Length: 290
Image (cartoon, rainbow, N blue to C red; front, top):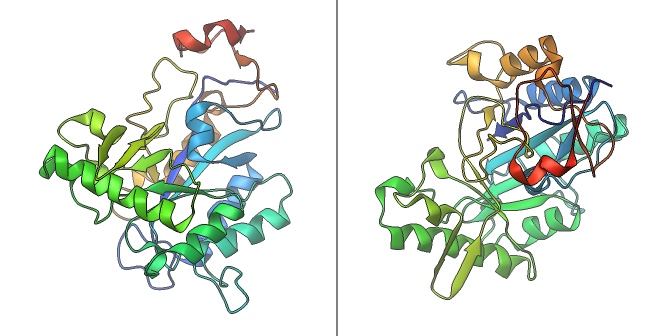
């Protein structure tokens, strides 16, 4: 299988899925479906942000993890039809359809929401459906401010306040991941991962940037859970297309030893002796070089 569990992992970033794109951040439903079909055909298996950051995922030998992340809580990502199911043409509906056509392509993703989630006053209907159906809910702050331009107290209020909205909507849910608005940390970087305000304490195992390149393996010495880069979903053309998902998936396909390839054993970290990536100290005991 040429397993390389010290290889790169694409963490893909989506915003609106719309028939009428208004910026480079938007994708059409057809584009989104085509990208998912490509991922399935190339042996990628979706995992959540927390599964990736913790290294706790079990995917078949020879396959590659990919993290699908959605920012802002747009109704183009999820809204329900009259029966309570995801409305046709939304990101969740398309993901479920592609997964049904490709057994093994897990229909999971991480949704980073601000207030109100999916344009619902409380977000309860959408957040509960996503949680009940295996999707991860992440924090994207209350109002999407540039956290580098507010005080530390205000940054904590933004993060803790959004956690309260999420957990009020889905009691018992533990929010474990944050996507930084605009990819900018608070001046005190540690406040993105840990803090408290107004009686709410938060902790994030992963903090997502905007970024422009694939992320390191969670077992790599280069892995930094407080600074996880993401790749914007984008076709082959347009502004900064060389840093978008089409370009990066092409590069990983052309250089397969660079990407994370599973050995099928979640208790072992396999990598060719020829690769230069070094494991983290915590992963040393699990590493098998061949």
